[in-house]
Length: 200
Image 1 (cartoon, rainbow, N blue to C red):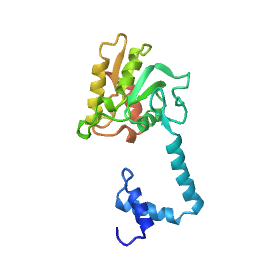
Image 2 (cartoon, rainbow, N blue to C red):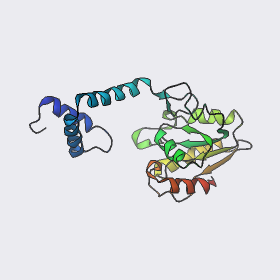
Image 3 (cartoon, helix red, strand yellow):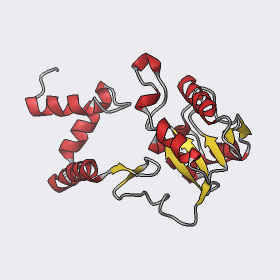
Image 4 (cartoon, one colour):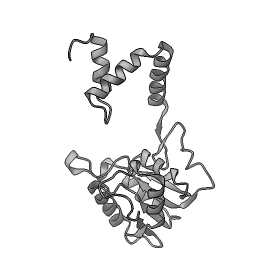
């Protein structure tokens, strides 16, 4: 890597492993960090290590938390009879930004992606089915991103939940661009998609 000092070359290489960070962005970030005061860089490093040590999956919904239950699952004001199924924790945040949804969530921790070897046993699908079949759930909203993998995951889950008495399975309405990620949609678009959800 050019003629960088070994520690700088390693920093650029590690930053380049982050999603959406190419070689030029990794260089810019590395040089930015080197210009920062020592305490700011140490604060960033400590925050990363602290999050990695303390953050785990919620025992109920598999959202990220530093406790047994995430703040949403432990909130008695949430409607636990409606479960919104999302692929990743950041998708949950996109739904929460709308301030339109008051149910609970189930985070799959990914989407079905056979080409990458990700099948049903690699996701939190079994736990979702068990939760729904345990009773008390009247609606499951499949809010996986409208990409091929998200649609396939939604259809797979809908098939598993077919026939559960008293359960409605819905999918977010159009308004979300096909092939787009839920995480990148603005609040108004997600809100309209939630409002116009349809049975699947």
